[in-house]
Structures are given as structure tokens and as C-alpha cells.
Image 1: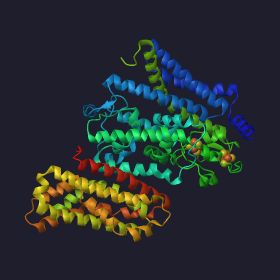
Image 2: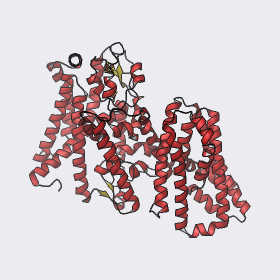
Image 3: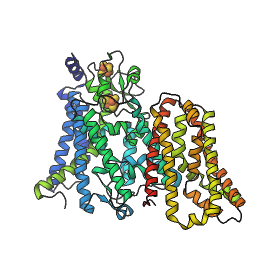
Image 4: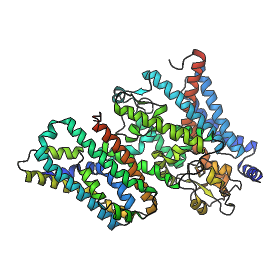
Length: 391
Length: 203
Ligand code: SF4
Ligand code: SF4
């Protein structure tokens, strides 16, 4: 029954070959501009990496349109981008500094790339003291502060917390691990833990303002484990390293593998909580058609970020933490869940609403994720042809 | 007297930033209405005033020791941080409790806001250090106390809007967030406190 209903749903949202191909044309052109531009295509390795990235992105987009499935294809691209981000980031660090360690000298030279996770903690100190407390460069270098902030504002206004499932290279690690869980042994979490990201947000914003330093970066970020971390040369930095690694192993590896949920994103990440605020002020939402819903609660079990509960289901809405990943939409056996454009009549044109959401979301994903995929592939190709990723 | 008040006014925002990681989670957890929030803020400020005045006295009598021994100061501040962290942990630990937070606070923790205020009052934040340096130059203990008192009044003006949190809707969620945030802040202060007590390298 579930399988048949699911097929019906897929046909509802899926497009014919011709339509899917036609609607993929704008993406072919846009991604050609965005992904192929700026590389030295005369260099065979760069040309191959850029070509593969371009074809891969467009294949994924076409499949999304043709099959009507959003989550399945988004997830492939999202996780690939995340894995290749780590490859490319680490290779860059080794090329620039010869180590993953970030020394005081590197920090003073403004060499730390701005990670979006710090953005909420920058705002209050910037308003109070007119200083950016992150020790990176404003424009130059890898992920300058200004560049990252402009990208973040654009994307947040376009799709709100969709950031966490369409662009965040860290979220892809969580999602990748969760997708490896075939039979969850941890089946439920106390609902109250879903407020922890808000609490972490509140605490790190206030502590950053109090100490005029990026408190989250300095002592809470799990992803330091796979990017760059302060050189361990004192009791303090040793303790920090223990915290970073423990949080990474717990939240990004163990709990997702055991529960199938994105526990770092759904139960800890302060940036995710902050992005939820943008879900209130952008045009796209995920809604549930109560007339079709048979209260099977599959969507509640499937949502990886705890963004559906009994109350929200009854109200026909998601919680504000929805990352618009599309998983509940793909999995609902009744086809009761769909993307929706706020201010329009719900369910009048669900296909159009989905398409209008997919274009901006996918373009941002292609730009950021495509950059990660290109960078990672290039390093891997270098490794294959020269025996080393750097140089 | 005016000098202390003006310094307080000038640095009050920073003061608020220093105290808010402790006060805000607490207020969010307990913000039943504006009156209750105002009461808690006043208790907190009362504790903070006591902390300031105690510091003025202690600085007067034992100032030499504090100023001369950086290590001792570090260890003492570390101790205060650890105490603060333990209080926040004890408060935040109740985040899963179904009991009315107000009742819990009344029954078990009537002195908490004041104690938290006292401990943040003993905190050597930059505005406080400025006030300390200025007060140390006054001629008598009375002048030192007056200086710290007027400094307290100046900084406290920034705390006045906080009781408006009592107007917030969705109190159950806010209560949980406030208590969880107290736990996160507690871990931070514990970590800093231990490092400072161990003669750590925090600037
Ligand atoms: S919306 Fe959720 S509960 Fe309703 S039918 Fe779909 S999966 Fe089941
Ligand atoms: S509610 Fe649906 S779209 Fe939103 S995060 Fe959960 S599964 Fe994804």
C-alpha cells in the first residue's frame, strides 16, 4: 500500500522527459556561468574537475525534476560536497601552512577563513563596539568575512533555514552519517533537547559579547576536528581539542549512526537555530494537507532534524527548524506534504511552488557545493596523477 | 561621585554584556510576568551591588595583595568562576522538571538571583577594572564605597529593560531554553575557572 501510494506521489510531482529537459535548460546555462567560469580550463586537471562538477550538478537537477523526488537527489549532491569540502579544505591548509593547526601568528595575520557558524555571534559585538571579533581577513584570502556574510544574507533571504540542507558543508557530514543508519537503535529523543540549539545560540552570543571573542569557535565547534584547530601547546588548547573531538565523535558520528537523525544540526548547532528565524521571513514553507493526511506519522519518524511533531502535524505546518530538505515530502505515502509559497493559496499549484523553490535553492547549492566538489575533485585528480594532493 | 556614575554610564553596555550570560538564561527560565522578572532583576542587582561594595572594601584593605600578586588574583577569580558555574549548573539541571519554575525558585533557590548577582559583581570585567583603578586613588574608604556605588547606579540603568522579557509569549519553551543556556554558560565558566585556578593561560 505504502509503495503504491508513494509511486502515485512521485508521478504527481515528477515531470515528463521533455518538460524536465526544457526546465533544466536555464540551470544548464546558469551553472555553466557559475561553475565553469573562473577556472583555467586549459589545465587538463581543472577542465576535468570542472566538467565532472558541471555534469554532476545538472544530472542531479534533471533527476529531481524528472522523478519528483527532492531529498534523494539533493542528499547525494549535499553529502558529496561535504566530503569533498573536507578534502579540499585540508589540502588548502597543508598547502598554505603545512599543517591543520592554526597558530597565533596565523590568527594575527588574519588567515583564518570565516565559518558561517560564527556569524550570529559577530552581530552584537559589531553593534556595540563596531568591531568584528573574528580574527579573519575582511575580503582577501579563503572565505573572507565580508564575502561570507554577503553570501549568507542572500541565501537566508532566499530560502531561510534551507541553508542547513542545501548549502552547509558541515550539515552534509551529519546527513551522510545519518543516511548510513539503516536500523536505528536510538528511536526517540526527549523533545526538550530540540531547544538546545537555541540555548547554545543564546549562550554563545552572550559569551561572545562578554569576552569579545568568538566563543563557539574557541571552545564548542565539533568541526574543528576535521578543519583547523588551535595548535595544542597548553592546558587550555589541550582541553579545547578534547571538547572539539568529543563533540564531533558524539554528535556527527555516533548519534547520527545510531539514530538516523542529524543530531548536530537538530540538537546542537546554534547557527541552525539562528537560521530558523529566517524561515519566518522568507517566502517558502513546507506545508501539510490535512485533508490527505492519514496520521500515519511516517513524516515525524523520517524528519532528520526533529522539525515535525504532533502539534505541528495537527496544524498542517512544520516547526520553525524545518530545513526544507524534502525528505518528508518524498516519504509521505499520501503525497500530503509539499513546498508552498507563503501568501498564495495552498495546494493550488504545488508543482509550480516546488519549481520556484528548487531554482534558487539549487543555484546556491551548485555555487557553494559545486565549489567544494570542484576543489575536492581537483585535489583527488592531483593525487592520482602526481602522487600528492598539494603543490 | 559623579565620576563613578559617568564611568558606569559609559561602560554599562559592556557591563550588561558581561552579566547577561548569567542573568538572561535565568530570566528566560523564570519570566512568568513582568513583575516577577522585575523582582528577579532587582534581586540580581542587589547581589551585584553587594559584590561591588564588598569589592570596594576588600580592595581598600587588601588592595596591595591583589594588585601585587597576579597569580593569587587569577586563582581567586578562578574560584569565583567555578562557584558561579556550580550555581548555574544546579539551576539549569532542572530543565526537564515539570514543576513550575517559579515554585522551585521560591522553595529551593530564593537566594539564587542575588547570589548570581553577587558573583558577577565580583567579576573583574574591563569596566570594573577601570572603576577599580579610579577608586583605588580615592582618599578614604567612604570615597571608595561611594565611587563603586555610583558606578553601580550608572551601569544598572542598562538592566532596566530586562524585566520586559516577562511580556514574552511561549513561556514553556523559553523556560527550557533559559535553563539549557544556563547549563551551557555553566560549562564555559567552569572551564575558564578551572583553567584560571590552574594558572591557565587565558588572557
Ligand atoms: S503527512 Fe505525515 S502523517 Fe500525514 S500521511 Fe503524510 S507521512 Fe503520514
Ligand atoms: S519537516 Fe520535512 S522538509 Fe522540513 S526538515 Fe523535516 S523532513 Fe525536511
